[in-house]
Image (cartoon, rainbow, N blue to C red; front, side):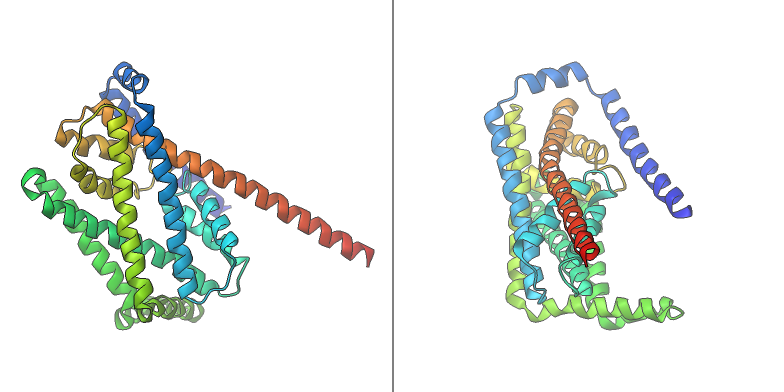
Length: 328
């Protein structure tokens, strides 16, 4: 009962934040102007951006599959793809991308007994994405220092950088990790599982080829994501330098991690704030953000179809096994 109350409260809190931010945003912008912007959009650029978003999701799937292989988890690629798409669907309404990670982890549990390594693969996949986000943001900011300098951007990128370094140090340093895990001394089973997770994560250190390839692929993915925003801006007749998208989009991704419904509201407000620095009107920036969210929804709906089909398949298997048991 208490668990259900907490889950309901968490959902209402996230929903409330998204609704409040969207209400604030739409109150500040001219909705009629936003409508006219969307009507006059160049759909060639928008379709190109949507296609690129599909490519991005496919590359993220490939990255996770690479990590899985190098950790020695033997599962069919179709199982990995199924769990990935289901996770993409749950990302839309569970607590940020963490909810989707939980669902794809639970999904892959059904195909392997190496559950600790599955959790490690999801964490590592998330780490590679975060490392790439920091690398791309820092390189872009330094490259465009003269035209894109802003104290807020510098502080935001610095916080992300130090937070990433601290997180990686915690996960990969055995002394630091085991020291923190001492808080679970009264729960030896939990502590052992956490230490087992650490040893699974550090396996990737021995696979330097996979390590560098995954980080390089993640940087490429981050740049492609910035290009989707750039193409969306061009579709809305905005001539924004690509370098600004490369700097702003990582920060928008980090903002989307705040508890909300699929990052909705948080992503849009941060997009308006950041792109206003280069002269983009609030209505246009909000449209850019919402259009990119629509691309995510389309991919998420594919995941929903996969999820429903998976449930139907399990029910058929369950009924078949029950029938065989009854005959016996």
